View 1 (cartoon, helix red, strand yellow):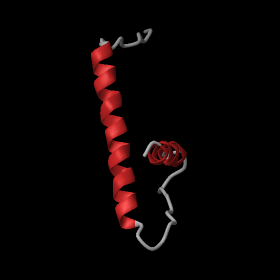
View 2 (cartoon, rainbow, N blue to C red):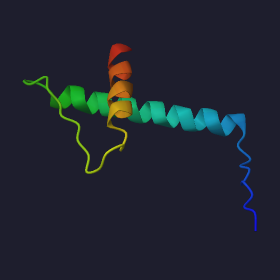
View 3 (cartoon, rainbow, N blue to C red):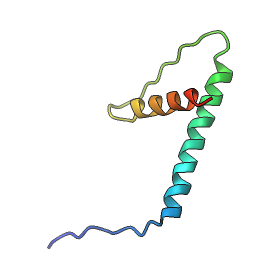
View 4 (cartoon, rainbow, N blue to C red):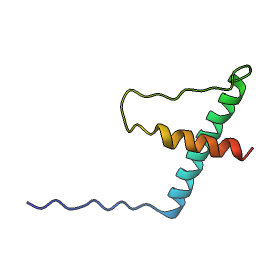
Amino acid sequence: MRKTKKHHNYKPEDMKESTFKIQEAFKTARTNLMFSLTSSRRVLFTSYEPNAGKSVSIANIAVSMAQT
């Protein structure tokens, strides 16, 4: 039996809203980092497994910091 792909019915509005929510989450993380880093400027990002998205998260927070 052949498996068929599920076609999602995403609308452009849904993608825009989703992107906005992700951007706001990174801005919130940036703000929390800035308030918590009063004396030290070092942060360590870790995860319990490889390929958990550390590099992507760090890059997005860096972009968010650069935009301020």
